[in-house]
Structure formats: C-alpha cells, structure tokens
Image 1: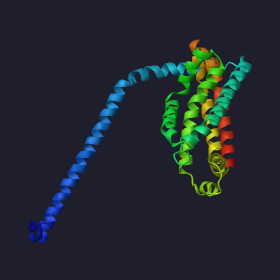
Image 2: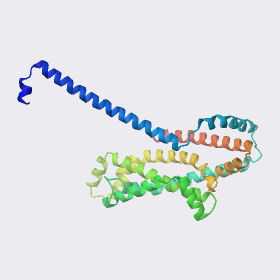
Image 3: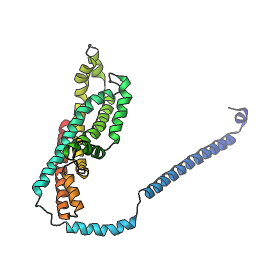
Image 4: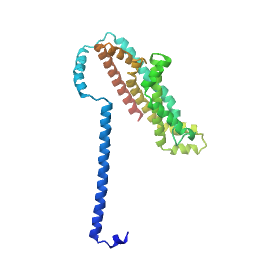
Length: 277
C-alpha cells in the first residue's frame, strides 16, 4: 500500500474503490457490446452469403402446397422395387457401419493418449481421423462412384470411411476418460499391453462402443437415403428419379417408406441400447 493510500481517510478509500468498480464495470460492458456487435455482424454476413430471400419463400410455399396436394393418392404400383431399394439402403448402412467399427477399434487405441503403444503416432492418427470426419459420406460416395462405378458398393465405402473417423474419435475420447485401475492392475502382473487392453479395458468400454455402433447404424440409414443422388444405389436413386420427373405420387410413396423404415430402426436401436446399459 502506498503512503498516500495509507494516509487517506476511509471515505476517500471508499470513493476510490467505487471508482475502480465503475471503471471495471464499464470495461466489461464495452466488451459485452463489442461481442454483441461481432455476433450481429457475423449473422448479417451469413444472411447475405446464404442468399436468404423471404419473398422467394412466400412465392415458393404455395407451389410446394400444390405439389403435396398432387401427391395424393400415393403410387403403389412399384412397391416391390421400393422395398428392394430400401433393403439396399439398410444393407449399405449396416455393412458400412460394421466395417467402420472394425477399423475404428485399433485406430482408437492408437489415438488414446493414455494407452497407445506408440505415442509418436498419437497426433498423426488423430489428424487422419479428423480428415475422415471432415469429409462427408456423400463426398466419399461421389468419389467412389467414379472409382468403382455406380451401385451400392460405392455407398458402402463412402459410409465406412466417414463413419470410421467419427467412431474412432468417439471411442478414443471415451478410452482416454475411462478409469485405468483395472488396466494398471493387470499390467503389474506382467501381461502385455494388448493383452491388458483386451481383458481389462475392452470389457469396460464395450457397452458404450456397442451403443455407439447402433447409433451410427441408425444415423447411416438416414444418411444413405440421399447417396443415390450421386449414383450410389439404394432408395435415394429412386427418390432422385421421381423428383427429376416431378412424379409426386411416386415420390410420396418413397418418402413414406423411408419414414416407416427409419422409425422402425429407431425403435429397434433404442431398445437394444437400453439392453446394453
């Protein structure tokens, strides 16, 4: 404390403290107003870049209403074809998710800081997984259509690669936060690292991994419905054909079938996840 402050009266010290509080409050208020201004500027620029035009929405909604009205009654003449394409979509999602899970487990071990056998690979593996996550399955499917041709196989590969990165990162984050008491106890017996992981760590994280796999399967069924737009097979291909031809009764039937399948899988996945908890 300075000599001037020590010799100041209590009233003067109180005034000095109040003045300091006002300055601090003013500074915080200025920061708040600056933050609000930046947020508003961000959304103003985003509104402009996104091309938001409410007048187009006002003129487009009546047109959409006429299309929906013309979609009734639905066209059921091609129901067996739609069922086959829907089965392709579910199969694409199931195989892609399964392949991603099998690839994600070893990558998650390498990407877990606390258990990786080769710490030097931690960041390269993390960067690789982030790259996979950063590219959507739609883009991967588009690339594989050019590589392996039209059909569901390209969709399976697209789903598998994107899901691989997302699932491995989730597994790795969970492994990094798991309690390592059993892991350390088994290590003290002289067991190898991979043996310890298999017997002390995997049983602990297995329910979460299975629940995550079910979630991603359910998610990929929904996501794979649009992969047909790029020629990757499934019900999305019929969806695109109907939209190109403006065949709305046929389009309504396809959308209704997608909704029924997605809702059924959602119920099944939710029931199975409850059994795993």
